[in-house]
Length: 113
Image 1 (cartoon, rainbow, N blue to C red):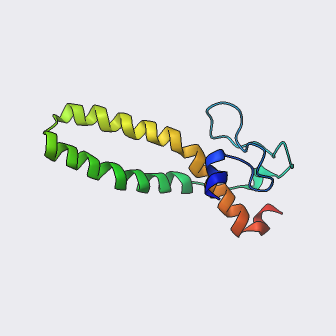
Image 2 (cartoon, rainbow, N blue to C red; image 1 turned 60 degrees about the vertical axis):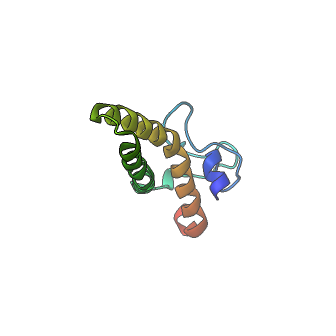
Image 3 (cartoon, one colour; image 1 turned 30 degrees about the vertical axis):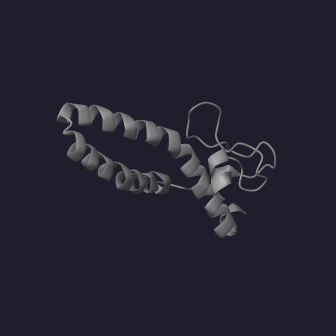
């Protein structure tokens, strides 16, 4: 499931991409390979909530440790951690959304019929 999420592939055939072309979070209406109807998916805010928890538990301790070790000025904290959080969020939101969709397909197959 994790490999499937990282690849952003269809949960049924494991071949077709589930996202439209470009850097978008918009799902395709159906898989180009197997025809799975992706419009029935509703991942809602789940991926964003998981990402908030994961990043906050990882970044906040790093910021506190960096401040204790190097006494970084506040403006530098704002620049460094904001940039890091934005890059990690943009880079990982698609794979996490694909992972949630794959989990829904595996554990709630009735929703896809």
